Each structure stands twice: as structure tokens, then as C-alpha cells.
Image (cartoon, rainbow, N blue to C red; front, side, top):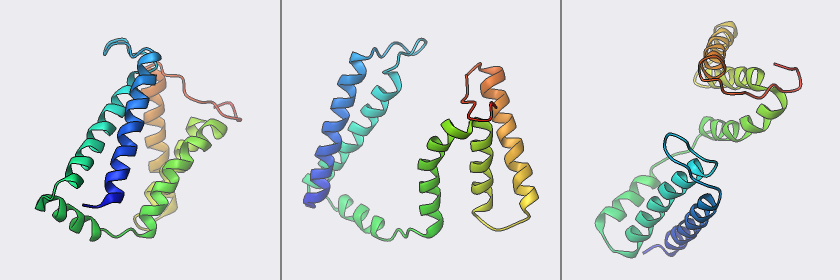
Amino acid sequence: MNSRDLLGGFFWLVLSVFVCIESIRNDIGTVHYPGPGFLPFWSAVILGVFAAILIVKNSSNLKLGKRFVELRRGMKWNNKTTLVICSLFLYPLVLSVAGYFIATMAFMTFLFNLPKRSKMWIEGMSAFVVTLLSYLIFQGCLGIRLPKGIFGF
């Protein structure tokens, strides 16, 4: 039994229960008319299920749990994985300042450039097309207001 995983599981379980309670206070709504607490509530439910699985796995001496730990040890993080994770945290911060179009185009150009270096104009055009299509879908078809940023677009 790994006590750190067990402690971590209890932490995430308590956090998910707290988020569920706060989401219920903010009105979950229904599937057809979701309230402000709808997404946090269901995300916390999923987090709570995973935390419960972690607690059960670490509190019993099943060989399946040992195999999972061995599998996880074989995973290697490289610089590209770290860059993608950091960019995923940076994107929402840049989104509110630069606006949807500029932030998304820069983000997509970065992601397209990450696997292998190819011609920059191809990656830039691909990022432009993806950004434009997503903008048209979100803004035009779905009517979702996207952040305008400091440049007004």
C-alpha cells in the first residue's frame, strides 16, 4: 500500500465533494438548461470517482494495482510533453488579453510546429484555417461570445 497515493486519493475525494456542494449552491440546472454549476458539478463527480478508485486500489493488495504502478513507472516525460502542458495553462491567460483569434492562432501554430519542424507558412496557414473554422462555428453557428482582447477582434 502506497500511503502517498492513499492520502492523495482522500485529498481529491474531499475536494470533489466540496466542489459538488458549491456547484449545487450555484444551481446545477438541467441538461437542456445548464446552470453555472453544471460543468463543475459533473467534473467533480468524475474526479470523485477517480479518487475513489485510487483509494480502493491502494487500500487493497491486488496485483492489478501493482501492475498499474509498474506501467506508470515506464512512462517518460520529454520536453515536448512539458511544453504542451505549459502551453495549455498559458493559453487561457493569453486568451483574455490577446483575444480569441490571435491567442488561438498562436496556440495552434505552436502545436502544429511541435511534432516536427516543417515550413512555417504551412503551419501558419493550417493554424489560420483551424482558428477561422472554430471562430465561425463558435461565433457564427452557436452564437457564443468570444474574448475580443486588446485589438478588438
